[in-house]
Length: 374
Image 1 (tube, rainbow, N blue to C red):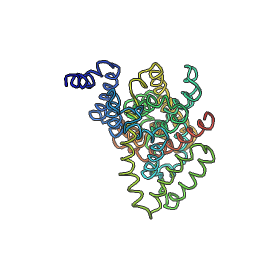
Image 2: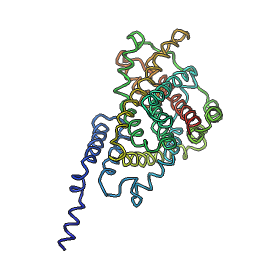
Image 3: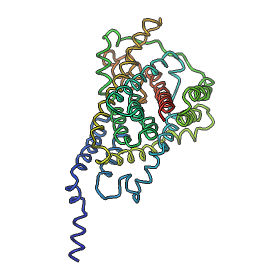
Image 4: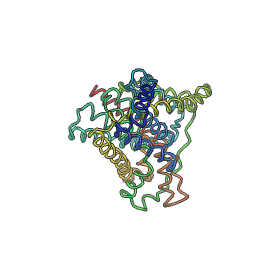
């Protein structure tokens, strides 16, 4: 009996955590993410599942790590490792997305494309720091600020970096309200931030129905390696715009995407165990991720300023920052930044143009990298 009691005590979390202090560090990181989600409202739908999953995955010998072949998380992690969850989330995103702002002002697509410069800049930076081409591709995609796309490409190119890359991508998505306003103010004058844009033209229902079909065919011809993402995204949008599948569209953009987000967040967090995460390359990945995100933001703003020298109708350069695909957070940040200068300047619909273009742009960039590196 005494031996049984001693065995039980030796296997409690108090003892195992004392023997694995690095896991306590990761539990602290998980608690930090939860705190940011609750107190600062930084993408709580993402940070709370990831943070709690991180706590679960760092209890030694609890069977909550993806590496434990007998644990439930091991089987749920299959959806991360084999790109199932990212594809399903893209279905829900498509059902949530309104392309009206982009279709009414096609020139705003350029801002979404410009933001992808951050991906390829960081790719070369990662190569310079000693990462392999495949690892560099996975790290560079952080600049798109698109968590599902990041997981989709990392699982195929550098699965061993998935915990660090995924946490970095979602962390920078959550920090959009902190990072982007600083970059925007540094690159623009007050006069530029006060620009009031012309109201967008109305978009017909026929255009909205045709776009997901035409958009899908165009994108897969350019980057066929990302056909799964494009297919799910544009199919979800067709469900929304067709007008005859409201039940499917409502399910995809509500209960369905929420369920998959919970599973993805818990699995990504649980995958960030101390053994996988606390490595020297993780710090490099976070630094490169910040570079990627900052360059993507800055490139969009700079291109908007250039467009004002080319087009007659002015573009408020703030919306260039929304070219990253953190939908709709980046568009909301553009609105708040503009209204700090002029409370009556409602940029949200204009900002949604480059924002949704950025979703497509990051998927195209992912397809290009996969074609080059897989």
